[in-house]
Image (tube, rainbow, N blue to C red; front, top):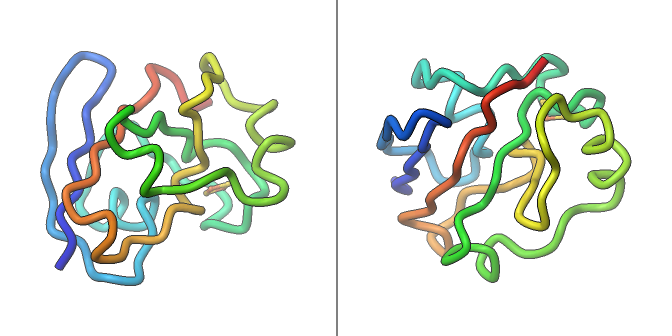
Length: 107
Ligand code: FES
C-alpha cells in the first residue's frame, strides 16, 4: 500500500491507503475524496483531476507528462508550477506518503 494525503482547499485532510500502481485521481474516486472529479477517466481529455503536488513531493513525482500542459490550460482554478493532472501521477513506493493539495474548483 501507498499512503496518500489529500488536502482540500478548506484545509480538510483525507489520508488513504492506495494500491501500488494506481494513480492519484483513481485513488481519490475509489475513496470518496471530494475535490477530484476525473471526468474523462484518466484519458487526459479534461482537467477535472487538477491537483497541486506538495512542495516536498515535487521531485519524487517528476515532471508533467507530455500533453499535461495543454490540458491544464483548461483547469477551472489557478495553474501553478506545482499543478499536475492527478491521473498522470502513478503511485509507487517512491511516493509513499505523498501529499497533494486540491483546488477550490474543478469545473
Ligand atoms: Fe481527465 Fe485526468 S481525469 S485528465
